[in-house]
Image (cartoon, rainbow, N blue to C red; front, side, top):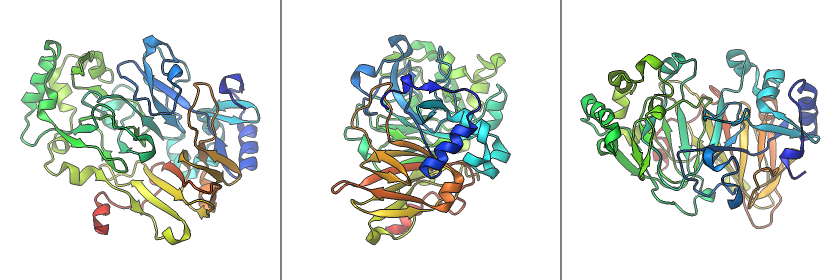
Amino acid sequence: MKSVKDLKTIEKGVAKLVEGALADSGGLLRLAPCWVPRSFLQPGKRLKLHPDDLYAFGLDRGGIDERWFASTTPAANENRTPDEGLSYVVHAGQRFTLQQAVADCGALLVGKRIWDQYKRWPVYSKYFDNMGPIPHHMHQSAAQAKLVGLEGKPESYYFPPQHNNVGNNFPYTFFGLEPGTTKAQVRKCLEDWNKGDNGILDLSKAYRLKPGTGWLVGPCILHAPGSLCTYEPQWGSDVFGMYQSLVEGRYVPWDLLVKDVPKDKHRDLDYIVEQLDWESNVDPSFKDNHYLEPVPVADTAKEGWVDRWIVYGKVDGKEYFSAKELTVEPRTKCTVKDNGAYGLICVQGKGKMNKMTLDCPKLIRFHEMTEDEVFCTEDAAKAGVTFENTSDVEPLVVLRYFGPDVNPDMPKVGAHKKGR
């Protein structure tokens, strides 16, 4: 099986296929790569997508700079394809969306608690890969997004070393606003939108990005992500508002500032400024409250494997998501138990996950099927998944992210300092 495009697509009645796939694999679903373009950004070329396929959606749609993992969330792109942003399950020569699988099988996949509360898989993760920085922007809160029939979006970042052999043009991220910044100053930036660079970054502070670290960012906080390739567990929404008018000489349309704002507020500058969580944006201890470094789950290094928290901590008192990085040394096998379902991507090496092959690809064509992405059901996660590194020389490294309230015992932001 080499091309996802050639598989038969099933849209209804996928429950039996799902049950068969879970039985064959030991509670796992194989997922095909899900590529997403952005018309206003330049691809960073570290997704392992073949260079000839960077504009596979068409030049007018923009380059492919994202790969989404275990996603049931549509991408909020203009002129998008009907299934853009949706992950496909592949089994027995057929394919169907994970969204449809969850709709048909519910608790069997995501667990009873998440299904009863959300009736869907409410989170997703992605690689975000650009040549340069993106505009200073925020993601609306749940209450703000609800005004336009959408959901808010907290998110998180981890910079996997395997995808950051180069930092590209600007490996620094602006976060929030400098303490002492006033709302009038931000409003003035909006007034100056069509005069060129509106100067919003003059009010902010950039932090140097380091592979193997990360950040936790709540809604309504301004951020201008830098040019490291980023693994981003986040809530299942694609809302945002861009507050910067010019990036690397590229114009940012006003429409991208107000796309998720009620229509009667599209020119209401005071409303747009008031969307920001002011206290969080001007927090003088911003890094202490948002910066993450990996924290080991347990002391297992002598056994040849290490599981580490890479995304942890709550946003406004709520656990929206979390993520771990598992490293298994050559010719080592381990069984890992988790509290809930998760999406997994293999970032290095090869091996097995229960009955399923894991193999990190070197280069991927646009329609090519890979063996690096998996969705693990809650039952399988709780029973324990066996990972085996079949290589003699290279570690097997996988990243996996979890849904809301799955890991209440995870560390708090700042926990990495305790090991120093």
